[in-house]
Image 1: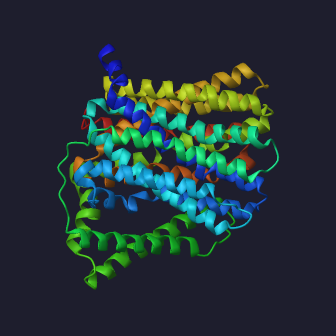
Image 2: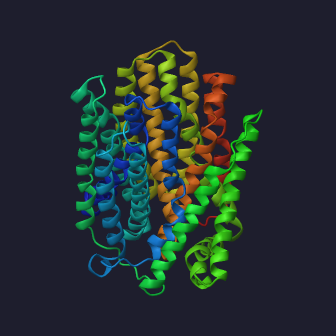
Length: 488
């Protein structure tokens, strides 16, 4: 155990902690912190919710992950392929956050939209590269350590950009809206991004031989065509009619249909472009089809089962998590109690759970850790059902929040190690981006109906339902365990 713990304090792990910080910092600047800024600026609620579409960059980052895997940037010969992409995305993040800090939502919302699209796109690109960098930097047996350190840095950064930024604004301007205070906070966040930049500069490029596809002109042509295809995808997705259905199930099905239609349009556009000779069919196959064929060839008939497991593993956590803060407020707990136990104590518990999850993945294997993580994630949701029918009790609240965050941290670290074990070194960025996008897609889509479930069944039954949603995950893991195809 001592030999495993020492890996948490070596240079590679500490640098991964810093890269995790760099990955976690922008995410809340695009979501919750931005929402508060717009609300304080008296922007209409309907307009604020439109900004959530910026988050599509995180959900569909696999669309441009092949570019990160294959496009050789001009400075690659000096820094290396992965480091150059990391430096580019981090510099773009700093510049786009600074650009956002110059915006005024009351004067020009379009300027603000553009700056936050740049933040989201740069942040998603950084995520693609860090995931590939982490997997390629150490052997599989050390992925647990790297995943735990990454998650620890990520969570701490979210405190800085979430609760920290709001606290700083309140100290600078109180409860009144002051544009300069918000702009200053975003400038400070841009400066904090230097942590990741320094970590990248002092990191070693992974020793992976990469096959170059085409000359610079062909690569540039390919990236332009991919950007056009992505634009086509989002244009169709966001412009398909919004229909109102009698049941949430029908609404859920229609949303899936819209995404399917958009994907078909994207593939059709690529096919049409290739017919005109603007893009080489062989290159398209290499960057998009080969990563998927590689995965299918390695896992054969189990590939579909594995993809199903990936798509629903975090479903209990994510569906429940959407309603957690609303539940605390409606239950009657004070904002101070929620902030302290949910954000501060919860953060410590999450990091602790992540370290334990990483160690267990190293000691017992990724699949056993994954199974235990799925069980405790479901059990802690049942604890919230008990909290819903109990009298308000701070000790009970704190205990359940700690248990839930320990479980979440453990399951999160175990899952990252598991995804890393599935990824081929040949297609690291493309495959991991697809896995991580799939991991969030279905849970996030279902979580959108959490409020409606609470309205119909109440909080206690909602938490029980969210726990039951985790049962298929347990059965899938037990099924896959029979085949013994996973390494420790």
